[in-house]
Length: 373
Image: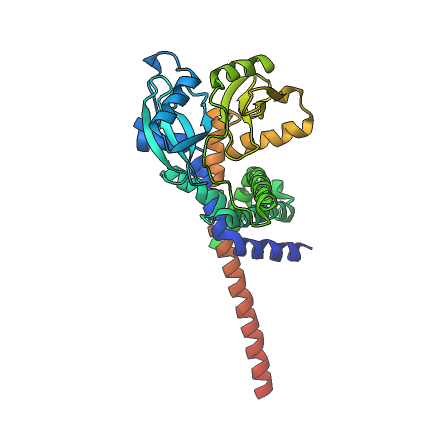
């Protein structure tokens, strides 16, 4: 059984090591995405919190519409960090492509013109992480590799199920293959729980998104091309947000979804106070009719079942921000583990293959000598 598992583990690692390196290392970097953005373009992503109160959503929306008359606003990111600039998602008329702009929520000033979702370095890295830069087919590929990451973790733990006996043993003075074997086991056992979580949650999201795309466009239907505003100009976003706070106690809006295609309504996603650190900042929602502004429904994650809470926890678990800086640093470090596992595992596989090859050649030469004799 161990021989079969070892072969399976080895061949899966060989087949997936390069994509998994890209996925895991990029994920490790993206744990600190905003911090990297701040280093690269602080003037676009950070704002002065001493400038006063936030402007109303209606005033900010009017400013965005006036600044970008050829675009329609389809989403609005309201970050819980008061020093982080608002991120406004837009679709240009005559197009179905999303872009986003950055604006100062205290002054209304435009900090960055609309750019594609992969224009900035960390956004490009995010696309590389999720799709390998291959759009929807890339979602399927990364899903497969995420599943392989989970299988590698499971088979590795089974192969080294008695790891605690020599867990902290590193035979420094032994041959390199022995040392690498010890190091591979140690790093693999330590990293496996986190890599299993990251692999499973990533596979879940990508498979769900890919399945949605197939369901929506399997008959060849194209994405909706934006021609005009899909919600009533008479609606007040600020009034809807204020009403949302009445619908869900303690509700803090973190993202506003505006219609990007016919049939989509206005939804406020947000955070609520809870003692569960794994629930995300988008766990609860309030939805309004895009034309009349009438309440359609409200969802409070605190009143939801266990299943909904578990699925919502995938966001925190994937990005590792459930325990602040400590968990983010841990996720960042563990995300680099596949690099070390690839080096040590590759070396072990090569040396064992070389050993088997030499043994075969030795047996072959022996048979030849016997035939000649």
